[in-house]
Image (tube, helix red, strand yellow):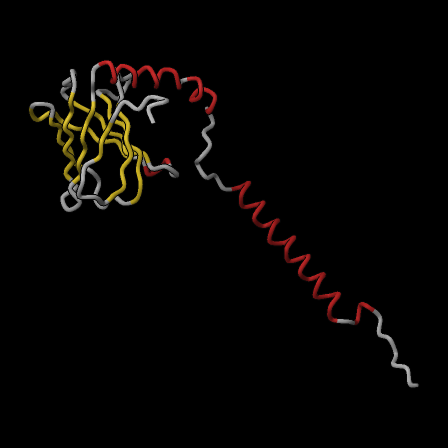
Length: 171
C-alpha cells in the first residue's frame, strides 16, 4: 500500500473557510455595535423620568375632556389638505391646536392651528402628502391646555377620524 503524505491543517481549505466565517461575523457585529452606539435614533428621550411623572397631568386633561362631553370628528381632504374638525361638547375655544405625531420619528411631528368657523367647526391646512400612520392630539391651547382629545389616523384617507378623551380602561 502506498501512503499519501498528510498535509498540515494550515495548508487545507476548510479550516481557513471556517476561520474566515468566524472573523467576518465578528467584523460585521462590531460594525453594527459601533453604528448603534454612535447614531441617535430619537426614540428615547433624555428627560424620560419627567415625562413619566407627567402622565397624571395628561390623564387629568383627558378626564376634563370627558367631563365636558367632548368628542371631535377630523377629516383631511387628500387633494387639498384642508382640515375640518367638528367639535361636540361644552367647549368652543377660538382656536384649536392639532398635533400630528409620527410614531417613530419625532422630527416628523407637525403642529397645526385650527380657527373656529362656526358652530363647533374648525378649519386649518395640513401639510401636503400626509402618508402612513399618525397619532392625533387636539387641545385648546399650546401651553398647559385644559383638556385633550386623542386619536389615530392612517393617511391618505377619504373618511374621518374620531378624537376622544381616551382614558385607561376605555378599551
